[in-house]
Length: 379
Ligand SMILES: Cc1ncc(COP(=O)(O)O)c(C=O)c1O
Image (cartoon, rainbow, N blue to C red):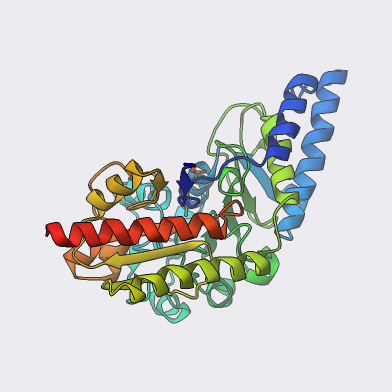
């Protein structure tokens, strides 16, 4: 029996065509884009072409994106470099309790350096509102960082409304769009964001590669210091094959409306089957979020045991974000949403991708029901 992968929010398999492009580039395009010889010129041309494709996708100018080693580096750069560059205007930052660790850890570091951070609490649906941001803004706020789609619940945050609120304030607005790329339409101008992070491995591209959009009007010091690459905003020889693969992954993204419809069908199928089998559950977040994630509380079922049992029958789901999976730490996102400790320890994340089929999902749901029924009897 084939394994069933339902952990696309952690990472995605690379698209075959992306692998082809990367392989070809590795064979034929080994140059350093900063050298003036013919190999460097070829690499530079690939770099420029790829930058154009990727920046177009988010309606940015080519000069407004830099390549990084992934979402984590983009988030670290956005937060730490902004704080360093703007500390003369204030030391207050607004973010949320439900950000990815690659936002929360840099914020923790900044707190140790004398910055003050207001962490907005989500409501029970896992949402943050623009009003909360507006109420938290102060004269000395220099940065607002709110993610676009939460990686554990799939809930979409009102980035456009928050952008409206922050637009006329001195604060820089950053959004972590790592889980949004490919699912939501991203237009940096319409959203009024100054900084936006993406990652290639969430959209069938290579790992260890991402971008940071930096609004042209913003001066952001380099986080990785060294050479003058990426118009002096990120040192290090560019990974041309990976970047070409990222561009290919962008070009091969499927229509998001079609994906949303497909994933909504999968979510409905899961909850309907659970109901038909009298399994007690509740959705964490919103079942109709137009994204690829369903987080579900299976009442009375320990998530660690359930995940292990599913793994034993060849099904991969998650009990938290990829970076903490494997550890027994309760999800900080669910903790922020609910006081109920059982709910936090009895919830799993199921996430879909373009390779997920209806047949696979049917097999998964049947296995899930069987295992949950068995575990309920053991309790
Ligand atoms: C919302 C979010 N931000 C940032 C990251 C980090 O991205 P990367 O793995 O490319 O460093 C992830 C990865 O899980 C994520 O889900």
